[in-house]
Amino acid sequence: MARIDIDRLREDLEDYFGTAMFNGNPQAMMELEEVKRASEQELISLARRCGFNINDYTEREDEEYYR
Image (cartoon, rainbow, N blue to C red):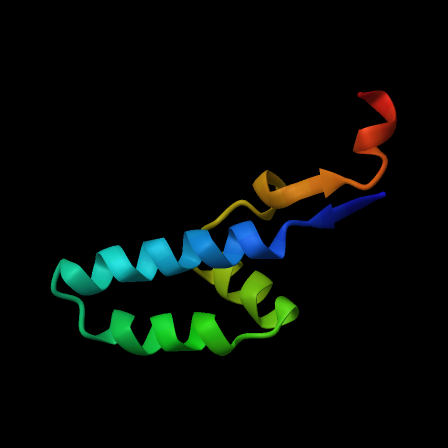
């Protein structure tokens, strides 16, 4: 079973919109606030809209078993 690393996804989205904001995109400030308040499902939807590959954020729950 795989699950999504929401903390890492949230951090990457914050970096994504933070960079856009400092590069002169004023809309990015509102998106950055949305990222901070978003639920897990909202983060996944936002990431997909921005072109993030959600598969890059999946982790196996039984990963520790193989270590």
